Image 1 (cartoon, rainbow, N blue to C red):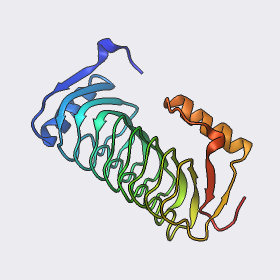
Image 2 (cartoon, one colour):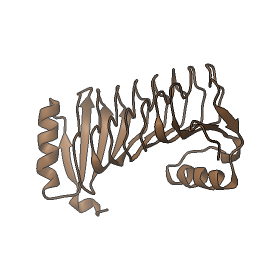
Image 3 (tube, rainbow, N blue to C red):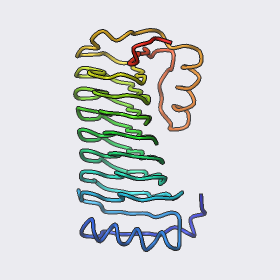
Length: 220
């Protein structure tokens, strides 16, 4: 979006309030911000709008990138619970493991976890896209009404409980239950879509190896 000479840099701020204030100040003069030395602070980079980029290094606490409408955040490390909660637009890319309840009630946007994720992933998904390049330690897609979930690894819980819409693509083993959900092979259109996502986010997965789990009642 911008060249590196325009980057803002926030280094080793002590609290989430300090960090968020510094981010807001820097975004007034640059649309790219860097944060280094994060040490588990909650509520970092939340409630932001606009076409901006935020690069974070370290370990985040809960609610990283929640309630955002536009920004793209790259987390060079791990994140805690409830990352990308109620995401509206934009994205959160986590280069390591993530906690529980990530991608809760996503209205839109994308969450990419290039590691393992905790239980209750993408519950109540409205229209968000969630990709996990690893395993999920529990349930996935409970109460979802739309959107897409892609998981390359194993799911150690149930999938799509109490859900009425959306689509889940899964390549690993399902250790829990899919209930009465219909499972089919992906279509050529599905494979093309998966390939575009995997190529864009650098995920080494074979689209044809995925199963398509239909959460909606009517199989299309």
